[in-house]
Image 1 (cartoon, rainbow, N blue to C red):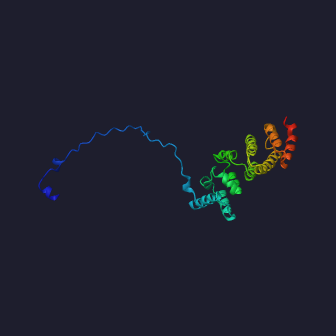
Image 2 (spheres, one colour):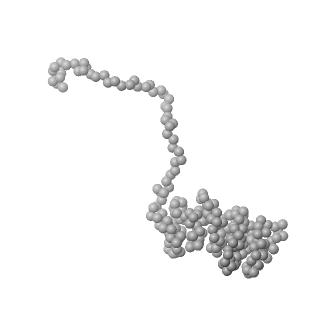
Image 3 (cartoon, rainbow, N blue to C red):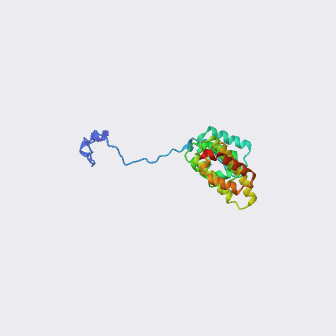
Length: 233
């Protein structure tokens, strides 16, 4: 630099004018870019879940579809799902798995249904009862649910009708009579609890009692139905 100065060269004569666009004058009002929309954002709640617990819960529920769960696993499942509701939403319990869990582990099915009764989609699980095979386990579980949840009377009536139709469609006589006894006891229990009105399905109940009049429990049901007829007129 000192050498350049010693030559008395005017550096200003060698400056280059860079070509650039004229800047726009910014107004005082800010203009936001509205072209970016964030639609249907969903928070991934599994990020907050203890993954070790979740994997254990999923494993137990998977096992519950295959075999009876031991007391230790059952206690672990109940403790985790009772205290951490986020686990419940991601534990793998679906309406498709409900029928097999009812038969293999009725108490677990009962626990899970009570836990999810206030969640969206619970109606799907109730619909399962009027689609699957009627068994002693399903009848007992339905009675337990009625005692703990406010099931609509229309739904209860629909389920009883479904049970009657299911009995009528069984071909094997011994199996049919066995289920008829279970269904008769179940309907008597629902009547005593005033879960439904006989007038809504009186014709079907009478036909059921006449069809299976030789089955012991059915005669008791018939007497109970007849005893309620005056109050339903």
